[in-house]
Every structure is written in C-alpha cells, then in structure tokens.
Image (cartoon, rainbow, N blue to C red; front, top):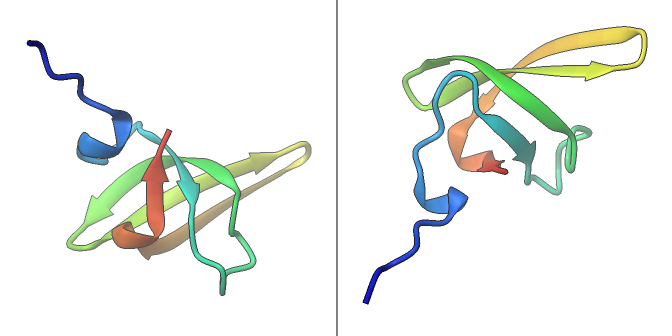
Length: 65
C-alpha cells in the first residue's frame, strides 16, 4: 500500500507558500512566500494589493499550503 505525503509533512524551504498559524499574531491567516530561512526562523514575504511586507517569524508558527 502506497503512503501519501501531505504538504504538512514536507519541510518548509525558500519558495514555499505558507500560512501563519498564530492566534497572537496580527498576521494570523495571512498567506505568504518564504524568502529565506535562518535557524528556526523564516523571512516571509506578504503581498497585498499595493503593499509588500517582509516579516521574520518562527518556523513552528507557519503551515505549508
């Protein structure tokens, strides 16, 4: 029987699309693109209409989509 790999099982790498899962963050639910990873933190680029924002946050607060 073949086992399926879900996106949650794959490592988050630069170029991955992620969603913030942190109820205490103003970015909770925002979808962005991982630009770089350093240690246990990732720089995530959020784009929205006429604004772009690059935020660094812990990898454990991100979910790959």
